[in-house]
Length: 570
Image (cartoon, rainbow, N blue to C red; front, side):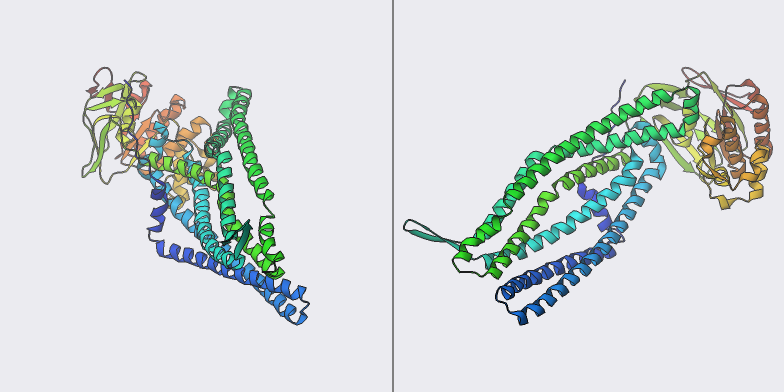
């Protein structure tokens, strides 16, 4: 039976953007944004002064008025210097604002990802791909592009209004005579530049609308290619045992071929958009000069006035052309926003129809489970387990055929397997530790790997050396400060011994071992269980194992069979 998992409602872009601007950092962020906007307005004012001075320079040059020319030239230089200085300040403030927003947003996604083992649920149920890449790269790019769009949009709107007013006043009216009809078009240059700019936007959209899907697909294929490379690096030894280098190369080539094809499609589509857009714009580059000639030749305006009109026309055109130039960036922003919306939905997805195993912390001293009905994620029945009660200091061995649900039962006790029905209650103050067949060992110093998930300074070096010796890792006693990728440096047996040493160091009240000694020889395995029993006398021990020799270290046996597990006390 296939069960369709319910999905979280996909958030809108506003639900991704607004939380930061409503957070505890909103006042500082709004102040920085206001400063950037004010700087933008000041840049518009400086342009107005520069445009006026350029006209005066032309008129003074044509009239050979040297006394007026030099002051105007000096004023033009001063305006240019002020424009550069203000522009640099704007860049610095805007970059600091981007960093502040990205930091807040990254922390928010990391908390949602790591809270209540959501990271495990996302991967187990394959809700979304490349979560790490979306947080590390997509968040940064989304923040950067959003702020750039908002700031530039405000600046473009304000500058467009300002330059439009200037062009309307400078351009005047065009008087036309057709036969006996004589009429004038006030502000004709304004109508002309707007009509031209709108046509450029329409042409660009017509040729570039397919870029949204291509850019969204690019994020996925690039991340998948990087993931294969990471797999090759982290599983180098296992791949070498299989002599699988050639097969891995083929897999990566197949993955890269998707990257290549996507890139070719983006290049071709971008080329078509840019060619049509830029060619269309170049075709009408002399439009403002041609539009101003009738009034200049009629003597209505001077050459300096014509220079100012052309400057104002170009300023309006440049402001409006931002919508065209930003088109490709906008479709990329849409693609990245879609990926973050998918990520938010995945991190807040509700539980499915069969996700009814409740795990609660209560004031008690034992781990207890009601009759548990375990199911696979798609709803297929897996096992029906009898009630279980584990008191402090007890030793339990879980037995059953392969696939009967032993490991799944441990996951349910850990709160990692919600698929099924029943209730698990855990001691409120007790510490639980689970050792799987292959434990996670982070890169860094050996002491940090041994003390994980606690900080290295939590334990003394002498305590760390003592547990290493107890787990037959004497050769690493003097290597606590060495940094390495211990997950790949240590053999499978050494990794399992390190995990047991980690348990001895943390001294949990309840310790669950899921075939955590399967890679060890019988003598070493027995030595580790002796160390656990002697060093952790008050720790409840629950083991999943197949070797009969381990029965001697457990007073209770829990048989998992079909259809109902029997609780047999040895």
